[in-house]
Amino acid sequence: MSPLKRPTIADIAEAAGVSKGAVSYALNGKPGVSDRTRARILEIAGRMGWHPSSAARALSDGRSGAVGLVVDRPAWVLGVEPFFMQLISGVEAGLADAGTALLLQVTEDAGAETAAYRRWWGERRVDGVLLVDLREDDPRPELLAELGLPAVVVGHAAGTSAVPSVWLDDGAAVRETLAYLAAMGHRRIARVAGPRHFVHTRERGEVFAAVADELGLHGVPCLYTDYSGEEGARATRRLLSGAERPTAVVFDNDVMAVAALGVAQEMGVAVPRELSLVAWDDSALCRLVHPALTAVSRRVPEYGERAAVALLARIEGGRVPDTLLDPPVLVPRGSTAPAPR
Image 1 (tube, one colour):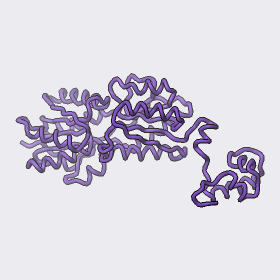
Image 2 (cartoon, rainbow, N blue to C red; image 1 turned 180 degrees about the vertical axis):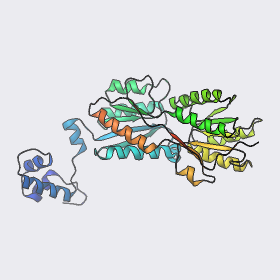
Image 3 (cartoon, helix red, strand yellow; image 1 turned 60 degrees about the vertical axis):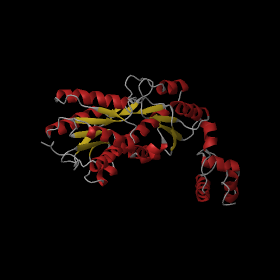
Image 4 (cartoon, rainbow, N blue to C red; image 1 turned 90 degrees about the vertical axis):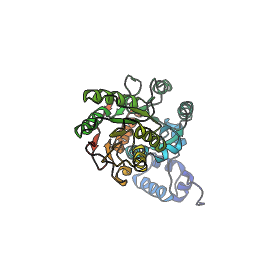
């Protein structure tokens, strides 16, 4: 057999000295061969590197052995944001025991994302999908329910009965973060958020405004970005150039917080003596810069793993309830200190 040729049932049958039917029975766990012959066939198949054809399996039982994830963000943004790398590592861990693969696609508009779901389902490329970055009035859950494509939302799918969700209550972390900064005397606290149309951006913002009001932090500014370091830096320059400069800024991701640290140094603003910085989603980036960034840890790999396990259960036809995970926690580091007098 050529090393470039995939081994077939016929190749295994020739090597084992049995019929193709006997090989088929052995590989598919069906009666018709002795235990000894089955063991010998499986040993030879493993040595030859034989694996079942996913296309053939899809024809026989309708399963592709893969799940899909579409990320509707520019690829260059995705490449520098640790959140998705951590999420994907968790998803892979959740799929590993089931022998299920992850099919990832990056798109740059909602139409391309919708087309991907229709194509994947029509071509039997995936058995289910994970939805991320739920948007206001998001049409995707209803579309997937209409297609009959099993799905799980990674995030809070409030009011979306068609698709179950695995989510975290960011509100608890917002409250903890603002209370921590307020206890250190900060009264001018700004927020640099992600895209305005994401549900989690709005929900986080609603809690941020309510808690700020409770703590007497009036007039708290919020600037919206695309999560990139460039826009995070631009927002930071704008905040630090204003007449009422904040003494603390909370960022919706780690990439923007790291960029903000550079801007503060560029403008001669000492961190944390004059300006405290907090990042959402703790990552290696937060620990590698100086000073290390105070961050909100959401245990993102665990988040991805739980979502993957829920999706596998959904694919098997089980009832999957909405799952609320343990709340995020604030991890104080060197980028926060008492407000300047």
